[in-house]
Length: 325
Image 1 (cartoon, one colour):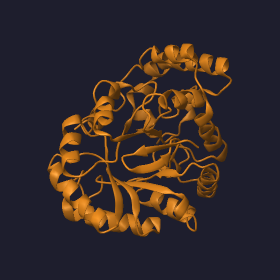
Image 2 (cartoon, rainbow, N blue to C red):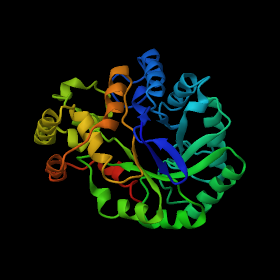
Image 3 (cartoon, rainbow, N blue to C red):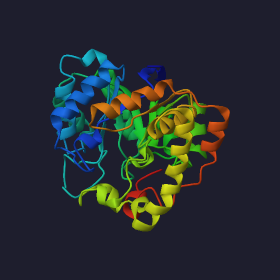
């Protein structure tokens, strides 16, 4: 596995997003033994960068990851996130990055992950009620205490990133980025390159759509988050299949799978970019890891660069208000 750096943190450039093992997608929480085997296989393949968060479950995903990496902690670059759960109240507060809440959050994550340090600790979403300088100040104290080693931001806007980085080096920005979500290329990707911040692309397979495996909304359980996503509305779903067909065509030409093509394209965008495709199946983590060795021709890259944009916003209206802040 080729390595890249997120700030000063070295990771394999193809990681593993653990969220869907426990939350939001069809089958979440039903196959924990297979999910643990998937994490073990990932580590065997050199996929050392594992991403989770306290909100996934909530809590159960961190517990799953903690069980799976027991005895193999030194093989893992472990990332988790805080900020969607208030441990201080009120229960309906929503985002909470108050200093005391961060301190409580990190202790809970350390306990569930069965570790005494977290390699990369992200603010999951920017809390508009708490100045980012206060947030980073607390995280910098946690770095000094050895409880976390590097600081990350998720779905933060350009001005927030600049202000945060001025207080303490930010190792990584985690934001949705894929062949069907390319808006980061306008401002955020150039900014992190300028500042020497790594980039972590979540949902790099378009929430599974770019794999070509999803052909109907009937493939989803009624509680699958994607049924609330505008890109998966009945009308947009059919329109977006045209993008998948083009990826499939390029994959056939390259002798790879559509998922591998989608990941390989992202890995050309920035030398310090990691992808964290999510899966709970061994065969999928094997497929995704193999994207590390896929080489795209100039013609294939040009075709991918010129793909038609996806139809529909990447989040519903309520969720959109919390990104790029």
